[in-house]
Length: 74
Picture 1 (cartoon, rainbow, N blue to C red):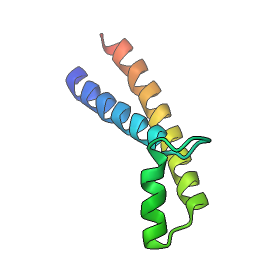
Picture 2: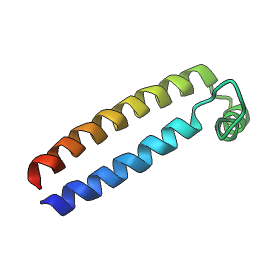
Picture 3: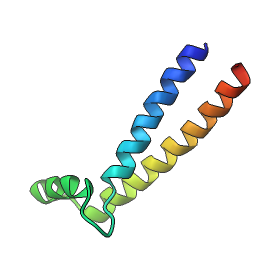
């Protein structure tokens, strides 16, 4: 059971890192990659940033809960 929760925590961690890096900030960073794709496909950058924001909050909450579960299991 602990191995399964640990794998979920690693997936959540990778998702959290990816969503934070893809968000556009005051500097270009990795967010410019997604911005270029949005321009190509005609997407709305504000909606994409809101989606990334919600996804990063979800990954952070999932990571926190999984960490607490791992502490209880061990």
